[in-house]
Length: 138
Image (cartoon, rainbow, N blue to C red; front, side, top):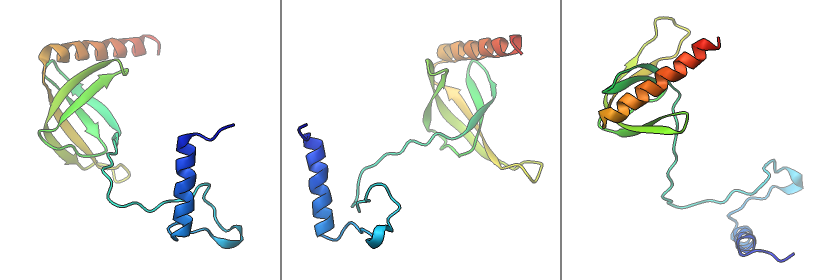
């Protein structure tokens, strides 16, 4: 089987990394990593982190959520239900809430205003339909 261009590029990168001493190969089989790690310079890497959230309440004009991470006021976020219906909303308020019980973690209460109230109405109805389906089968 012929080696692909990407496999050849990786092999070359590996050889050069070993020759230049960029890749540390532990002697005697002491390496626990499956693949070698390469040092990198400045890269424009974007990592999307999804905080753990729960809905507190919603209306036609907006939604309040409980989040494990803070949001920036003015930030525009996408809110979707069942990965099929999405609405954009602007964060208008974010505050840390200390729990009453010592065993619980602090969280952020994030208030958002829908950019399009018609879409907000559709999201509200979709969430309520989902709630009704859950209670019907419980």
